[in-house]
Length: 390
Image 1 (cartoon, rainbow, N blue to C red):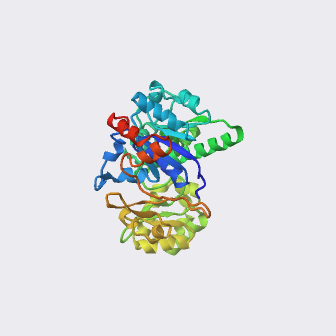
Image 2 (cartoon, one colour):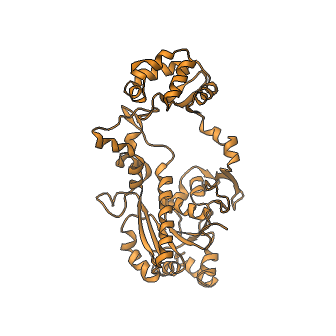
Image 3 (cartoon, rainbow, N blue to C red):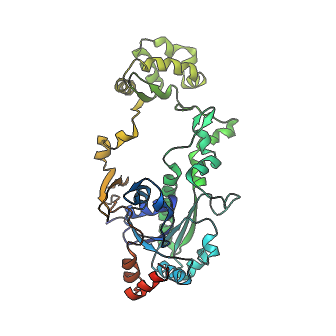
């Protein structure tokens, strides 16, 4: 049994941020019902594909039940309210005001289910001058200033792999769990307003330096905190090394027979080394260029630092540690296509996260949910399908 067993979630969201929130709740045992329009979540049509199914959709929407519903139709709106009576949490990522304009906003939700926890997970939130901006991960990175913390002095770059589309759902799930606890104590539901922008500002915490009289400069694969720290070229690749203590720096210099570097007034303390980082990086780069990547990593850890080999992303797929942690799972889709998607990061002794199935075809659970949960007859369901309601 998952720790959220018995919790029922209704998800009205598309693309990435909202759907991944639903996936996490599903990993923890919640019964997540994803509501899509009859033509499906637009994310279903984003490459690459496994057969005719979007790989992104399959991953972000694992562990859910899939129903179709046209909430713009009066009958569809009625059915949505009937579903709301049966759930604990609603997750949506529509542009702020969209559900209110459709007569489906939080006030209407509370009328049919006073204990509902209604979650809005948008780009910029319900309050503030940017609330009406459409929000995708890279644009929020840009507007928030997060992108300004990455890259080189002459060129910022986005954080890869949709960091806000993954981090914001984690914050959102924490908020949902807190709201559930509050409901346990008081019997009251509440509205939750989450935004990728807020999370981006928190992640770009380097902006705090501004209040000390300046802002850090982008320095590529290096650091404003420790020196030497960087991605160093080796004889056969790259290694990221962090020399974060005085002892580790002295040991490193001694290993290369250059103890005088550690005694140089420019490099005696970490503050000194940071002030003279460029000169020190030139020296350290010469050291690491003499070693293989494996030798560099082993050396840094032996002297008391921290290091890791830079690997191609494709190496991750067959990494023994990835396999030991069960971080990829294999599934067979209903059309017999094989798919491999990331598993769960929740490694709990008694209630580990579980990925039971990937994202499934549009409307896959219509009969189960509408007939089993709402007691809609098969004939009526067929009529609703003909009328374009489901």
